[in-house]
Length: 231
Ligand code: 5RP
Image 1 (cartoon, rainbow, N blue to C red):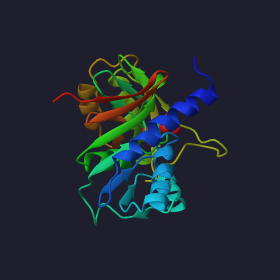
Image 2 (cartoon, helix red, strand yellow; image 1 turned 180 degrees about the vertical axis):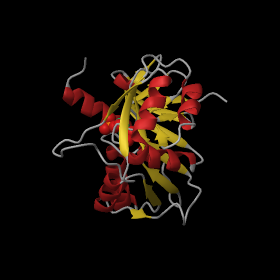
Image 3 (cartoon, rainbow, N blue to C red; image 1 turned 30 degrees about the horizontal axis):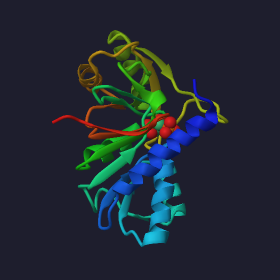
Image 4 (cartoon, protein in one colour; image 1 turned 45 degrees about the vertical axis):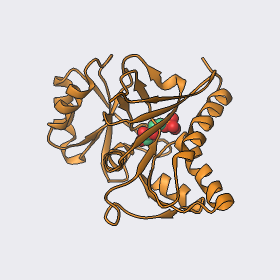
């Protein structure tokens, strides 16, 4: 088990390395979380040091605020529906490059942005890289549909837990005004099939299984490893 500062160093290494993928003229999806925050900060430095010019599409209020702080020009999916690149963090990535996201409750917008991009890159430290996905799957649900969504998730073999706020009584509310359930499915052998089943639940806005990762920037103790999806 790595200590917290080694973990931060690894997050920084992966996050900053991916910032080199951004070239002037690109439209870039900006993910949410503490790892990709290093990418966003490094992009701010490149704007100041090299005059890098690109447009960012943020995936959350957190990403938007940080991007503004870093001097990144922002746009919207309405203006730029096709992105050159999206960079984001992850809660877990398996060896087949299936991903679980949503630890920051931002996975719905993150998935929309990732699926709008020609290239989707994840930045992570090696604690997130596993043989099979086991992390509870974040699921965004309409408050109106909460009980039905919980029942259907139980029928799929999951154990849903409503995510509660910190420094706030009651549930976490997403940037879209919805609730989040963290659903433990144990070891997930067939993430695509599970994702498809969850997508059929009425009132389930989006689940946190991503299947379109192109490249993983993985910070290992031995150095940075880039793992690309095989064609
Ligand atoms: C937010 C996410 C984050 O990218 C994920 O939780 C990883 O966060 P961190 O880089 O802070 O470990 O999916 O919804």
